Every structure is written in C-alpha cells, then in structure tokens.
Length: 418
Ligand code: ATP
Image 1: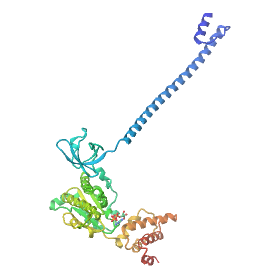
Image 2 (image 1 turned 90 degrees about the vertical axis):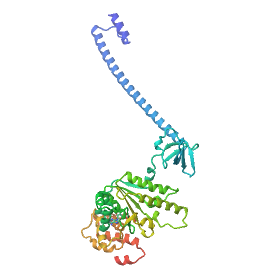
Image 3 (image 1 turned 180 degrees about the horizontal axis):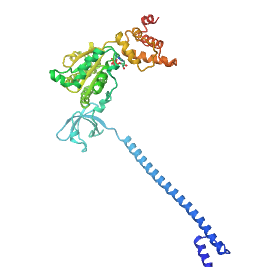
Image 4 (image 1 turned 30 degrees about the vertical axis):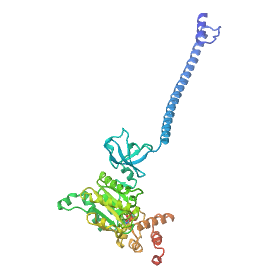
C-alpha cells in the first residue's frame, strides 16, 4: 500500500494524505481523476484557442506582407520617370523606327526586343524612354483615345413614337438611313446607291438628335455621336486623325450610324487668308470629305450630320455624292405642338381638364425642347404646391416662365396671358 501511495504521489505530483482507508483512497483517486480530466479539457481548449489565434496572426501577417508589396510597387510606379508619347512615322529596314514625338520633331530610335514586329505600323502610338527615346511599348490602339470625344451608344430607347410632328422627316430618314441598313437588296434590285450622307438642318431644339437616335434604335445599329467641335484639336493633324479613327470605329461596330452634331464647327466655308487654327479645321474637313469619298454607300455604316446653319457650310460638303439628302427639321406647328406636349406629359399625372389645343396656341414659336421644358416646369409647380396632379394653371405658369424667359423683352407673351 505504501508503495502504491508513493508511486501515485510521484505520478500526480501531489501529497496524498497518509491516513486514508482503502475506500477513501479510491474516492480520493476518482475525485482527483475528475479534476485532472477537467483540467486537461481546459488546457486542450486553451490550446485550440492559441492555435486559432496563431493561424489568424499568420494570415494577418500574409495580408500585411501583400499590402506592403502592393504599396512598394505603387511607390516604384510613382517614382518612375514618365515616358514620352510618340507616333511611328516609318519602320526602317535596319530595325529602327522613325517616330514623331508629341512635341513635334522626328527621331530615329531603337526599340525594345519585347515588341512584336506586327505591332509596328505607321500611325501607331508608342511610349518612349525620356533620355534615349527608345520605344518601350506600343500603346493600345489610338481609338480608345478618340472614344473620349465620341459617345458610343449600343442601344438607345428613343422611338419614332417619342417624336411629335415630324412624320415627313421620319419618312425621309427611314428611306435614306433605315432601308439601306435593313433592306439593302431593294437598292441592289433597282440599281441605285442610297444617299451617302444625310444632313438634318433646322433651328436648335427641334428634334434633330432625337431623329438620329430613333433611326439608330429602329435599326439596332450602334450610335456614334460626335459633336463637331470635338474635332477641333490643339495639335496639327489630330482632328484629321480623329475623323479617320471615327470611320474605322464605325466599321468595327457595324451596323452603325455616325452622327456628327454641329457640323458647322468644322464644315464652315473655307476662305483665303485663314489663320493656322483655321487651316487645321480645314484639314479636318478635308479628311472628312476624303472619308466620305471612300465610303461605301451600300455598306452597313450610315452617316448623319446636323447643323443649325446650313447657309455657312462649305459647298464641297453639300455637293451630290457627299451629303446628298437634306432633311429640314422645322419648328413645330400647332398640331405638332399638341403632339409634343402630349408626348412629354404622357407619364405625368394630369388633371382631366387640360386642353392641349389651347396650350399649343399659347406656345406658338416654341421649339420641341422648349415644350419639354414646359412639361417639366409644370411638374415642378405641382410639386411645389404639393398637388397630386398637374393642373391647367401649373402648365400656364410653366408656359409663362419658359416662353417669358425666352422672350422677356416682348410684350406679346404678356398680352397673351392677360
Ligand atoms: P440642337 O440643334 O441644339 O442640337 P436638336 O434639334 O438636336 O437641337 P434635340 O436634341 O433632338 O434637338 O432635342 C432636344 C430635346 O427636345 C429632346 O430631348 C426632346 O425631349 C425635345 N424635343 C425636341 N423636338 C421634339 C419633338 N419633335 N418631339 C418630341 N420631343 C422633342
């Protein structure tokens, strides 16, 4: 017994009371075992917790190391010297390139061995080392650069039914733009070429852009809209390049409709004694003429342009074979104003007693965009007065505001509402 006791004491590292009976001793041992099991359980739990914490700390360490690497590489990027942008002028046989830097002069330079020969084409933009001007990389196609100025819309939601009072114009546009895209065989059968370009002209806000968008929606063509003034660039040759790229982009995205708004900003009559800036605009116009000459009238790219000033356009643009279909977009007459007002108020909660004929009479001389502004203003008046629907007096107030703003000097509108 004494030996067992001593052995147990040694194993458990405790002092066991000596004067225990056998039964007490077994009870004591069982108690002690329970205690130790509990303790063991506790230690195991602690161990699990520490292992989990260790794993978390390791994953945090990895995360911070990754962040550190990103920040370091970002820092490196920020510290690197900038590259110069240039354009390849010629690829020489000895493997060198003639490039024009963005500042103007041309240089013969070497290039990185990682650049593929197939990527080297005159006109391609490249990045060059500042000191040696060696070509380091080829920049993505310059079209991405142009796209900044071009609004590329793959799908539009303007429909013919959203346009009021321009039925004749819509019919002409459908013949000149929609049919060549949707039923080219008609033109082949008769043996004529559809018009190369269609010019929409008329006062501002009469729906020229809307017409172009609607025809594009109807034909599911990509709509490429460019405002003419975007083509007036700072550097020589930039505008012409943009015109080239615009036509290339249209071909890539075909079927597509190119819509040049405010064409008069590059298409005004040329005259002698122009300044350097004027000559650059003329170069851009010449590029547009050249693109139109090389343009396949039966292809699936259609060209539309809009202007408020047909009278100042260069005759070269207007001769047959270039823009040869002219569609005049006139300010809305009484009937058209009724339709446009109905279109712009169709989603509004309108009072039943609104008489559109009366409103159309009050808005004589107002353009489509003016009528849209009237509808919106009327809604604003109704909101301001916390009404549930737009009433006649809201529309009258809106007409006073919009027409009055436009024509504040004349007393006609005053008399009209008196
Ligand atoms: P600009 O010559 O100034 O570019 P635009 O003739 O191209 O003007 P749009 O941009 O087509 O005019 O029209 C401006 C807005 O006026 C349109 O968004 C539309 O809400 C409204 N609008 C103009 N004309 C009509 C119309 N005939 N029917 C319905 N809404 C019209």
